[in-house]
Image (tube, rainbow, N blue to C red; front, side, top):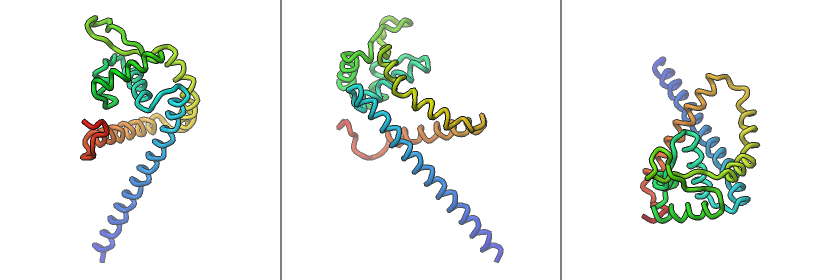
Length: 174
């Protein structure tokens, strides 16, 4: 009788864990939808499309990490072929959000930089969100924030791997 009870408790714990994982996945989906809406409002307000915004974020993240980004790396980051990346860069440069500059460390290489106006527009639009997120996290300890950071890194990496390895058709048609 004890074995049956132990197995039942283990099954209940496994079911609870599965439900908790599903609840978290659904919360992540909800967060993604909300953040996508914020990004879509920014894109609409500045005459951009979703890929334009993804590209600007990639350039900004590269700059923040101290690793300048080239056109080729940007194309990989936003999953565009070379010709499409060139068209994207031309469009963003034309509207004044991006510029191509010589890499100070290697004058043969061209890297991408966001313009001051693009950074200002982004700060104005996303600054309120940043403050709201900061307020939402203010009650968490450093240890809890470290755990949340690790979790978000792990699930972001998993989602990125999934996005790039599924058997579904390539949306770029290549």
